[in-house]
Image 1 (tube, rainbow, N blue to C red):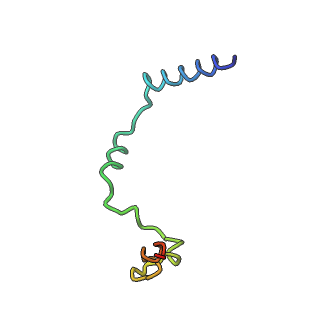
Image 2 (cartoon, rainbow, N blue to C red):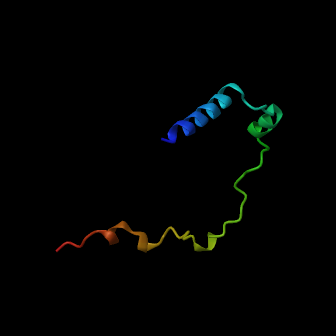
Image 3 (cartoon, one colour):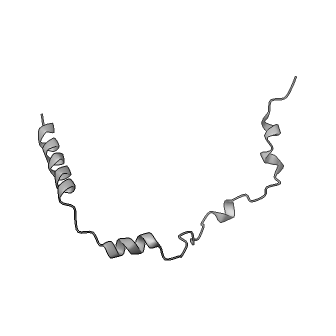
Amino acid sequence: MGRGRAKAKQTKVARELKYHSPNTDLAALQRELSGSGKSDHDFDDDYKEYVDDDEDDDADDPDDWAPRAR
């Protein structure tokens, strides 16, 4: 029985967002879209010591996982 009030509030909020959009800072949007040329991938990887970079590891050989012929 309480869904009518919740639906009315959602409809009111949706109508408000549709017809009354907030003021947009177009200069900030242009700066964000143009980018600063810096990479966002400059971060410290806390798990770098746990990564296995050895490509010649025989443990990852798919033939080791195949069932043995009888």
